Length: 329
Length: 223
View 1 (cartoon, rainbow over the protein chains, first blue to last red):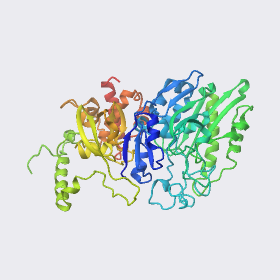
View 2 (view 1 turned 180 degrees about the vertical axis):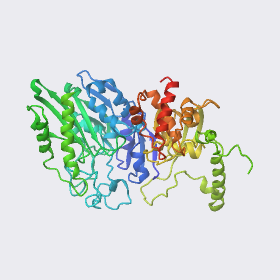
View 3 (view 1 turned 120 degrees about the horizontal axis):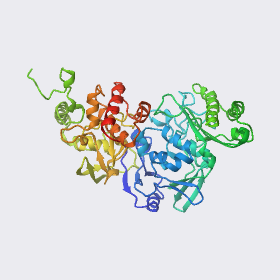
View 4 (view 1 turned 60 degrees about the vertical axis):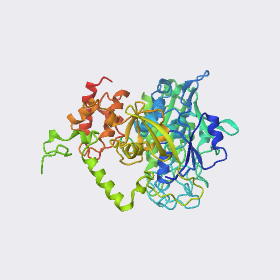
């Protein structure tokens, strides 16, 4: 691990001020991904500002029924919180399907938004080619072993996927990310927080240098109480998703779909909001056929590679299964 | 050979030296440390041994700061320790290399195996993915802190009783994790125990015994 300067932030403003104008500095929260990447030599910050003790771990209902989750709330605490379990059950399911109990006790919500891809070619600097780690060096995954890689929204520069489960549910919820920077606070809509790779795969998010995530706001969205997170993976537990689906359904009389939210994990460089499927489903009657048709529409632009083409059919079936489970629940 | 009470493994299965596996600072480890320490000191000189415990060479990147040492006060198993540590030292390395609390094991060193599991303020975490300097003021409990004198913690006793290990390397992490599991109230059936213990890998595959041990301990410790 490279040497680095370390300090504890007294408050959020001081943390932001300390790292202002220091592109090589990083905030240290739970550390579960950052310290691992530092051991690997992928991340080499010259300075860490420890924010883990700042009072940003609240989970509270706002007067307008939205729920605010502090950026330093631990994944385990969010998952087990009564407000989250009852109003956003798929968020609890997503959180508990990720990592292990030990890691969930450490990992923060803000850090989860910023965790980096588990693409083998990114995570191990022994591989020379990775545009995300070393812009311009090429993509080792394109013609390499790409079983866990993207099928939607990828570019010829990068086919990495975003690894988070939690973020898939947050994408379906249209959460708002509150960030603080040298020029004050701003809000970022969840769909604009993470980026597609394009020609700049080294940038995972639209967070500006030096900005600190303060909180994530969840909309009231009563029909999220009827939701499900389906995760398909190689092991029954403690594995990243090959494909995952976060879905919520608002069903009216005669199983008419009044509203629906769907997001996919494991298929793209960012949590993939399935807008085409949602559009097709709205107003229709919930049935296996309408679910399948919507899944076909969503995956129509999908492109597979040598080892991951199975994900296209898997994603379609997962959408159908997730929606079917909610319909009969 | 004379009968040696400190031999790590005896021939009768019921007399397996549980202390060598369950965190008693004796026997094989002291021997290995003494031998290894001596030979290294002869080979490369004592100065090398006093350098940081993270042994990777520093790349020749001119923008990188030099190594930095900071003071940290740690509270471990009810005892206070004042340490000067390199900022890079993980909690696991501080325990093992600086404080000789070698019960917590380094398996993968990447948060994937759970061998390094310790309790921080009663919650289980991977000590390999957190820095020692982050834990000023925390109450840290390691496998060495679970027993009450010579009386094993009920979870330790259950692991012995139910044969919850083979080689024993993952066992301190398994036991710390299982102690937290009971507190979290996630040990209500076999499937739940398996799911909530999935962060602790056992390469010997002693899972059947581990499951049985946790169920036995749950009966004795009211969650």
